[in-house]
Image (tube, rainbow, N blue to C red; front, side, top):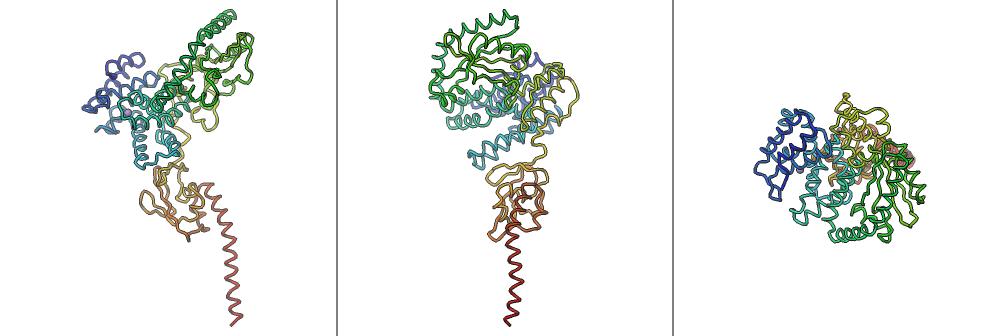
Length: 511
Ligand code: MN
């Protein structure tokens, strides 16, 4: 059975304003009407799918625009509803999100029809999701969409199951990880693993269960001792066991000899109020037990590239038991579970500069867009004005995406010309370029490439780089390559020119 309207509205009631709820109900009516008569493979009415996606988005704490877009996400592709219809009824933001989701699936079916699901395209697909998605909320809707499709995968033919599961494992789970959405990443991985490799899945799961039975009781003692000690020290805390996922155990077993060598099958997780207390707790643990020195990891001072923060340490108890601890603040815990989705939370939480400094980690340059997004989201939460541009992915905003005939995607700056593309593909190919077919039509060398163009480079054996190409390339990469090629062949040209001058004189002489 699937999600129905009552259930969705009951859930929504807890988080959204009267007006927002009114819009949500309106969207449910419109989507129900639009999908009328369509069925899922399970036999459920189609509307159960978008309603489940919307319910997930509510659980993730997304803003009401995203929930509305979740309800409407398949209407433009699968029904008569149009983007202008949605814009008229729900405004430009919701229309933008639905448009993004629709573009992602259209672009993907385009890629599939090229039958180029080769290894290199999985990188393409991630790029595509980010590029076409533009607004990170589009990606978050796609993740919720994928999660529900994975949850209802049993109704698909086995071949389709495997294909979808592989794509989920290779593209969507890593994407969730990149956004530090730990909970959905684990859900996607477990489901994919189960469909892709049921034998290994069941084997690993049984291995884990038998091992857990052995260690749980002993671990209970450690947990109790730590709990009591922290109480003595008057450190407010929560302590919890977190069990490794079946898939991550499976991956780890690849690298270690036996399950007994996996020390973090269960980790004890201690959640405290602030960063100072995290280090304090680390000290307490190291006084109680013997730390395994090469296993202390300070992801607070040096967050992982997706913004994940925590202290990790592994200790040996006096009974020889090896236990991993993870220590973090409430904010870090919340962010680790929900990741970027947490930035859009419906809570009107007031953020101080201090909170922001502590909870928003510095990220490496290639992930700076996440940081900018967090700042934008924080502004939004504080009720400060922020422009829609704050939510766009700056990473690709000045780039266009060009497809090769095989479906590979190359990102280039705005204003790039066909030769820029050719030099990106390969400088030897560029050197032999004699013309360009853009979307099946011949275009001149000074044609300005447009986002989404499919460019075929025509080559000829006799073609070679010409000095006036210098005016037909714009990227530093292409300019460098061309200059080097001209220099090489320029040397040759110079010799030929000299030889030509020399020849007539000889002829003249011989007359
Ligand atoms: Mn869908």
